[in-house]
Length: 109
Image (cartoon, rainbow, N blue to C red):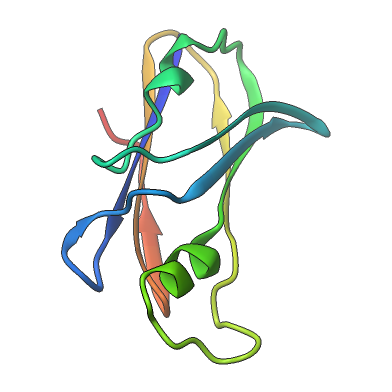
């Protein structure tokens, strides 16, 4: 099984480069990186994924502050945490569409 993510900045209409991403399985940190210029973490695909419950965490407030966006204190969205399950074979894609005040995600292909 493989896993990937793609983060899109819907406020600016572009990939979100430089977002800190962490993947956990339970308390164990499995992966930590930042998104590339295309909003992806290519090394995530190389991770050995087994069935189970996972959490992927995106540091969105830090990213938007870095883009010069003035956020309230505390920000409405500081970190976006997606809890998801992997139950079978194949590829799991977890895209994130995000702005300072909202986000959506789904199982992509």
